[in-house]
Length: 369
Ligand code: ATP
Ligand code: MG
Image: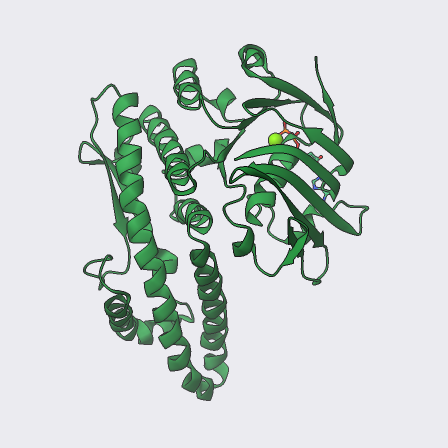
């Protein structure tokens, strides 16, 4: 896949802008707060309908704009296609177009412009709490499996409602009557998520292990273990069995949930553990090992997507190269000889030779000769 051209109107600090990109490396340079990350956000959003930084859609609409209009011309599946999103700041639903035809869901445009983002915050992904690791897996799966997106969204909605019911129960115990219905659906959709994740993590482990092996000169054996609800014996089991196992766990914790008013069990708490030659990375990994493992995961994500779509996804490197030492920079750059890449940085330095340089200044773009 290749983004040939983008047009932004009322998106973040871009009032009106158009830019054309090279098929290989595009270096986005500019001082701080000029709009480099905003541009990467727009590219990621074009392909997935998701932002890696906005909490609400409205945040992406320019301060003085009524709506944001993003359009991209993409070479995908052997032809030129267009993707367009129109976003509003209030509750008005966004509009999605593929090749000028209106679509209902983000799933209907999945696969046209898949992207992999790598930013400095990702370098912390393997150290702290589980949320960023889940976000990483969910983001990859949403792009890889169009049905996962819908299931994840449904799971989130049921969980939110259940959370409200648990809170309301405290004042009005009669509300608890409707809980079993929500729990049943939560377990059904949850089982589906586990099933997808199990397969994803297995492929990810295999691909990331290969990169890590190469990167560490074969000194460290990389393993990744998917961790989900404890009553699940085998996450590859049929969805029906997973549903029953989730129900068992729920019934074990139903009192705790009522007492705490929290949803205590389910795949919304899933995680994965990485071990290097058997040693838990999160607890014992050095900074260098953690960085190497993270890079391996990101490159693996890219490889799984390339396999799925038959073309390299677009790689978005936001400020990340400047965070890496020269050896790791070279490792990343050597793995991306093919495919399109967008690299943002303030100090282009040694990267300028890589490809097309685009300078960003105050929400405007000008190519540099
Ligand atoms: P850095 O090098 O520091 O990472 P950057 O070039 O990546 O900078 P961006 O994160 O893209 O900068 O953001 C640039 C500016 O966009 C910020 O000054 C911010 O105030 C502005 N901005 C963010 N959201 C909006 C919005 N909805 N409308 C208008 N401007 C916005
Ligand atoms: Mg930035």
